[in-house]
Amino acid sequence: MALSEDFLYQLRLGNPIEDVFSSYTSLKKHGSTSKCLCPFHSEKTPSCTVYSDTQSFYCFGCGAGGDVISFIKRIENLSYIEAVRFLAERAGITMPENDSRNDEYARKKARTYEINREAAKFFFRYLLSGPDKRGLEYFKDRKLTPQTIKKYGLGYAPDEWHALRDHLRSLGYRDEEMITADVCKYSDKGAYDNFRGRVMFPIIDLRGNVIAFGGRIIGDKKGPKYVNTADTPVFKKSRNLFSLNHAKNSPAKRLILAEGYMDVISINQAGFENVVATLGTALTPEQARLMSQYASEIIISYDSDEAGQTATRRAINLLSAAGLTTRILKIPDAKDPDEYIKKFGSTRFRLLLDGADDAVNFELERCKAGLDLSAENDKYTYLKKAVSVLASLEDALQRDVYISRVSRDAGININVLNEQVSHAVSSRKNIKQKLEWESTKRSLTKKDDINPEASQFSNQSKAEEFIILYLIKNPDRLDDIASKIKPEEFVTEFNRRVYLAVADAVRNSSEFSLSLLSESFSDAEIGKISGITARNREITISENTLNDCINVLKKFDRNSVFAKDSVISDDDLRSLQKHREI
Figure 1 (cartoon, rainbow, N blue to C red):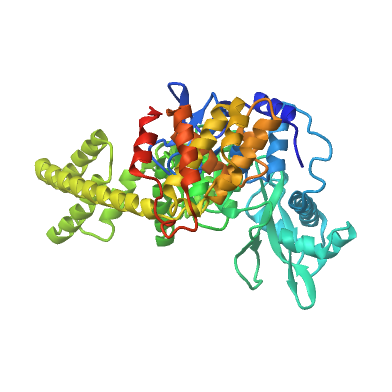
Figure 2: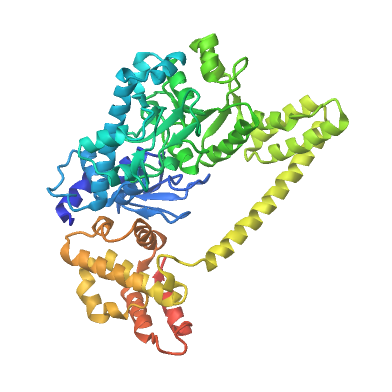
């Protein structure tokens, strides 16, 4: 639906982009702008800039950009109208009527939320009062209290093919809607229940919606140990965390990353709200960035077997890339946190958390695995591995501290170890520079998916961007520009679309903003438009430069045999450069 300019103005006024950004990531003031680690890709150096004057953002690393609506769409995985509604509720602004009745995708999401909520109620009721008591016995055996069962909305799926399907049918839901929500599957005999004979763990998002389920097999029933909801219109397993709806309320600035649902619930029941788990998959970059919004330190509590150790190393790398400090929990005399808490109590577990090893010590201990340091060959192997770990530390002071420790533990001259680490650091630096150069070369030849014609007609595309930028900065000159250049004279189709949309927004609005374009362009396209303004922010385009850009387009002849090459002369290029006032 078309939203009025007045409504969008009120929406922006009630949701300053700096305030909204600060709810998800840490902003640092940088002159008239603010910078942060981009919430949409992993990085160690901030490349995302928030502009207060234009109420926009742009990441120079991944190209994400736009206004506050674009940001909420991406960070919350919402449609355009859902993002608008989210921001309206945040600011206490009333949405215009008939805002989403014609939005098929929004309707599908709403029905999926409803089906999940009804399914969760069904599983919970069946757990407590159904004839099959195996689910309740399982939770009792795991020492869960009635309060914990209620807090997490735990349930049991009847060991039947159509129990949930028939219940949802009685409430008016269609089979295809149940299949979309993945509570049912489809066969040639029709829809059947996805979860059967399993204890059920609802996955709840930060707004309290049931978005998915995890089902654990119990007893001697055959099948995979866990069945988890596949991706649906309301759920992406790579972007959510189990129990984050509880953990986000913890005052602690650290999160415990546990391995599974029961680990999380047991730790939470012991008094630790700040615990989460992934959803049937290995930790993803999106989940690492999500955790960085609520904590600065992560304590990893994975199993000590080989699979758990491999998962720990992967998690360390992803969490570090998200700017998080990582520590590793060692659990003595118990196989997991649940067993440890039952044996020794929550006070001892808290001491265990406080004494968790840092990630560097974890890596150094891994270097010793299977080696006898009293044997010379094994000591040499250990030191070679340790040098690699030490060289990976970017902080020189931290590196020196651990060099001293390894030197002392292995009984090797610290100067010799220092020399080896320095050599490894230098080698890593050279490799990094080479990789960065290769990446730069690839980016120069990378196809532009948003404006694929830009690489073929680079000068014309740049001239078009300057015309668009001039119009955005000088909306009162629209009639003058329109008298000099026609939309059909734009060479690249994408820039033509942008020019037409900007011109229409300028003509029909009192003040231009990216919000006026959000409904007409995809997130990636809005990022591209935002990049045009961000990359050329310090450039003042004079009227002479504007005229030169217009001439570049007017001289272009698509039918010319030289059309694939630049048709702008050296004089034109010098003229363009002359009028750039940086």
